[in-house]
Image 1 (cartoon, rainbow, N blue to C red):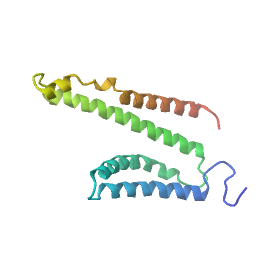
Image 2 (image 1 turned 135 degrees about the horizontal axis):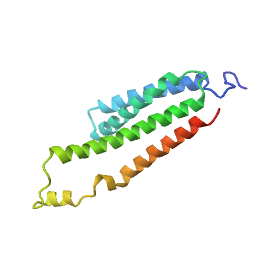
Image 3 (image 1 turned 90 degrees about the vertical axis):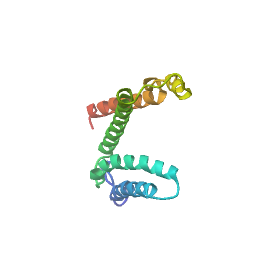
Image 4 (image 1 turned 90 degrees about the horizontal axis):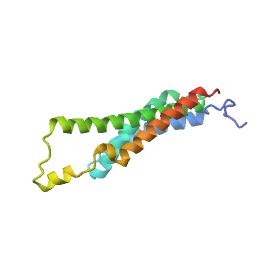
Amino acid sequence: MRNGEQGNGGLTPTAARTLEYSIIGLGVFALLMIFQPFNTLLFTVGCGLIVLAGLVNNLLPLAQPGVPKRSLVTVVMVVAMIFCIVLLAAIVVAHLYGAFFLKPPDPNTVLGKVQLNATPWYMHSFTWTIAVIAAALAGLITLQSRRKE
């Protein structure tokens, strides 16, 4: 065993420090992308990264030497599953907002015809991909919690 290596499969002090700095660095990088005044694409990517950084911050308590890697993987899967579920809920809420608070499309206009011919949100492959990922993560978390260490 090399110097500083954990025999129980836990994080080494170097790996824990690297994980901690990476999580904090992701948040700082996302904030820099949001508040830069040059490019709206960087702003958009920064907005997505700040949401990811907020979720990944849940891993900071586990960035300690000796924490089993298995528990770290479980928490990563839980955070990813929560992200997928929240994304699906946001899609449904956006649809409900449009259904209840916006006037229906006018079929006499070009824009109205386009809106009426659009694919419904529940038939998009993106929605189903996110749902399948969330279900797969839930299954993996259940299987992993049933397995003995």
